[in-house]
Image 1 (cartoon, rainbow, N blue to C red):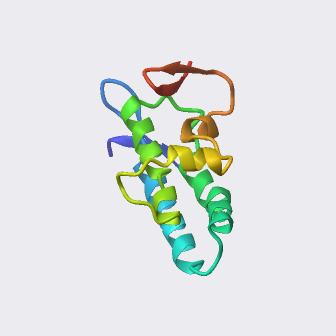
Image 2 (image 1 turned 90 degrees about the vertical axis):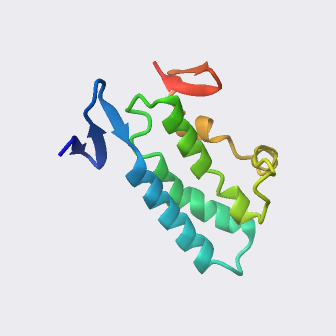
Image 3 (image 1 turned 45 degrees about the horizontal axis):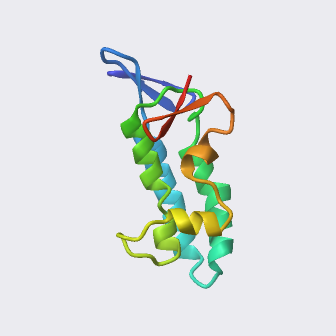
Length: 127
């Protein structure tokens, strides 16, 4: 075993201690796909609320407690592009304006409400 699972988070050993976020992303995709599949005739805003209430906590679990690399933060940001499936957008269309119009924050602001964050190279990091 090359890692340690503690409170549902897999810490992997290398030159530095890193966190494997693949389990959180799989759980998020499973929950959001289940919500989107089972709520076909529900309004988009209701589906968005369900995803934010049930799937987003799976994605952001232990996010504030670990120091993530820019690549890991980008993977979580890509996961949060569930807006494309929810509102039937094309892959080349940006979801940032839609998030703004829906009154939602970007994934970095949603995931890191603690205030100990620094904006560096277009990603938030915990100090």
